[in-house]
Image (cartoon, rainbow, N blue to C red; front, side, top):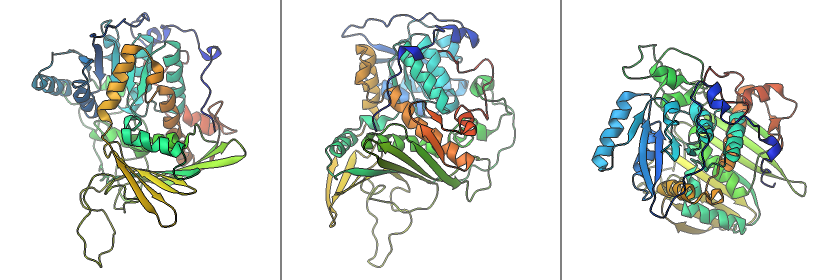
Length: 473
């Protein structure tokens, strides 16, 4: 199946910066990108600093052409912690903001790097595009499928450099593995399998409590419905609540969905089916912690291809050596009679991809493993390759493209990120509706299924004024 067609000018709506005004923010006139000389640095603002945002800070601080010029977070305690980190790094103190809308008024900022909860990703990125900023947005780029479409339109209309946080695309090992798949090292590849086996303990139940001092909870809620504060709707545990997150499929799993689709050279699927549940624990989590997903693709010549994906949350075996050799952890010492059951020493997690072809199969680990392995023929003759990791390379790639204005050099352009996040949204919708979804890749809508389309536009949640993703971008 060919990659989806680029959006044409008919699809671009002419709202200008009205979206920011309508959302209650001060309108920021779209400005031309700052011309950069060879020695100029890209001034970056990091938005969302509690978890992944700290990684953003550490990476940008070591990218030679990047300057951390501003920090934005709704939690004063987290802001103070990151300022202390910056002092230890010995880099200049940045400006600080609580409200993203105020940050976007700062004309000295070239780009923003978004590491907020998922429900803020698309809106914040669209606002930034309208304000003339380039964007690095963490995975998934959207909280629902429609938001992703709007973000792609905004990036194209305002000619912004928008990188998706699927950093495995910058892994030298996985890039080499994908090229080998293109060269049919394992023959014709007919199926890819993504694995997300992570030990996730129960989050328990959390009572309503006062909003912590220094937290602007109204801004944290943003587009989501207003709810009383509990710790299970806040730092990290928001992942397991549909109002803010997308479960582990949208947390870790979107990385492996992206690699599977990339390796297979596929776009949107035609049929999607997912089954699973929230098993074992009686707690506040309402997303599934076990999920089996199937994506079927119609390809030219009347053929079909498959991607499958599995989320497991507890005790599990490793598969295709992912989690042991590919994760860089040592093989455990075992007696000859000891079965290879349960978690192996060093890592309880199995995260990666397996590609099945007519001549053999190929497996990749996660972005830090820097390894892939190929098994060939009936005898499963093994070949392997080891390279470095990808994390900093992904941020460097973004900064280089901001400076050069060459969107085509992005390793994970938003158009690709939207499709991979879209597969995740489709699988979650299938799970929640308890049925197969038939999908039109051209219109990016479910076929004959109003309930599915309603859910793919987050119709079960809606948007809270004034934090509304604009219909016109």
